[in-house]
Image (tube, rainbow, N blue to C red; front, side):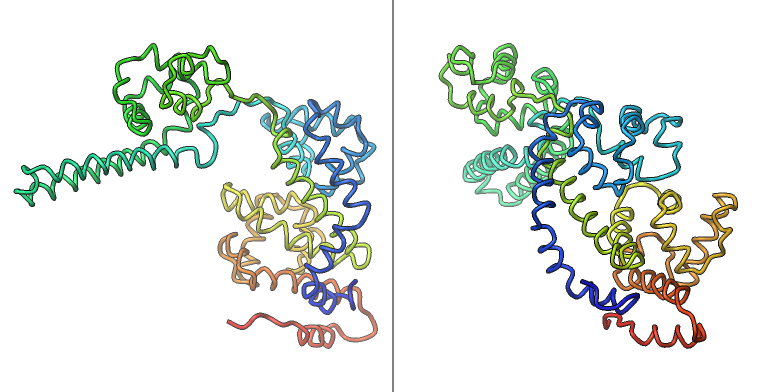
Length: 398
């Protein structure tokens, strides 16, 4: 529901956005298609399988604003299969950032993941390591030699604390690169932390035993850790789980299905808004897309090239800045230079990250809607229209 068009309609939509989106997402078709995608996408192993399932393909394409390509199965298959690494890949040659985003998202290359690469893996190991080191430190400082020499005790404690910090940093930075028992055993610093954490320092020289314990895991009753009945070694083997490494595509992760389904619901909502008011629909897409682009790790200049590669983002900026119709025909580098100069002059945007400021982003959107409404109005002077529309704009107080 949009009460009015242009700026008035936009401000009304913003005030009711969450309520309207929640209701929209619960609609039968959106709920049904989202659930189907999340249930089935993990079983798809190739671009060919994806395009063969029209329902899955529909959600996938809708998530990237490409509903109109639903019958272009050969094109979509090529885009996904070729990826984006090669300069001459089809997605890179189509001059539309949506194709690149689709190809990057639907990557069917299988990747092996290890427990050591999971978020938070280092935390319990480091906590146990530090607990044992501090317990040993306290016991050492209680000895007469340290009690009777406070200065020496303080120096000793400071050195241990410094070593702890070095070990913490090194462990966190290095452990994600460890993908086998061989890797772990080859790093004495990591092994010191690990064996201390699992109270197994007495196994320091037992390289062959430790390799078997780490490689065999604990699921098999005949695995060495189980045969030895050593709870410490069982815990060590379970923690690293080198025998449980998973080989799968990104599509088989829960996060992937959830993220695409969320994008799908958003895009469907934006499309529904656009059916009521195309300009407000485009403004809503812009509002969501700009922060995502700003958060990417590409250079500032690359972000502006991405803007020009997106029909939607380019359109909003060109309209907001009232750029001439022939702007897109000039040299692309000159377009970027002109665009950056104009947004700085008009909106005070010196860096793309400035668009993360809600006030600045709103100024661009309001400028776009204002120009759109002026271009669609007739019968009264444009200056009067502008004054009338500007009087409706409300910026948050600072």
